[in-house]
Length: 200
Ligand SMILES: CC(C)(COP(=O)(O)OP(=O)(O)OC[C@H]1O[C@@H](n2cnc3c(N)ncnc32)[C@H](O)[C@@H]1OP(=O)(O)O)[C@@H](O)C(=O)NCCC(=O)NCCS
Image (cartoon, rainbow, N blue to C red):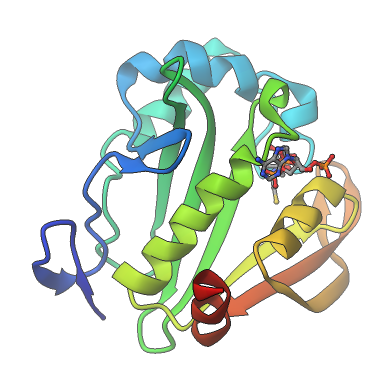
């Protein structure tokens, strides 16, 4: 898939120009000095309850951070772009927002997000996720982007709906996750619906 990078050049994949600015946030690749900010929420049971990663200690957070440092572009299907959500007012990294380039020919993507609990309920995750949907549809040229969450994760399901996604599927007991069977919800939005709602 051809995509347009930040300076308008066409090449395969997604090469954003950073920071991606929204009203309150700067989205950007991780830096090594994000460790303290990341540890502040990766270590919280209430944040990681429904994420694929466990509660992390400082060293585990550092190892996870190292793996993200070089990820500033999507060059092949199957890759995740993991961006730090920096609150511009304080320069604190308060969360992460993700975009997966799922497939090239089918032009499919997936989003994900996690935010420090102190910043829930302010529309910040939605602001970051909308910027990432824009990247996926406008810059990477995706046709459809989905979001998958555990059905008990009401905050995540609510956010995916606020983003204009439709519930397409409910998969009962389709994963054994953190010691129990879970049911997952799959939400998605297609490029036409996204364009219509962004112009409204
Ligand atoms: C999922 C998660 C990111 C959602 O965060 P969130 O803050 O609830 O989501 P939003 O950014 O959409 O904020 C919406 C809330 O902010 C409120 N809000 C306040 N100011 C707002 C504004 N300016 N704009 C929009 N909403 C605003 C809304 O009323 C809503 O509150 P409500 O939930 O009480 O109805 C968060 O719960 C989280 O990080 N959870 C842990 C990690 C996780 O489970 N990730 C998902 C794995 S699938």
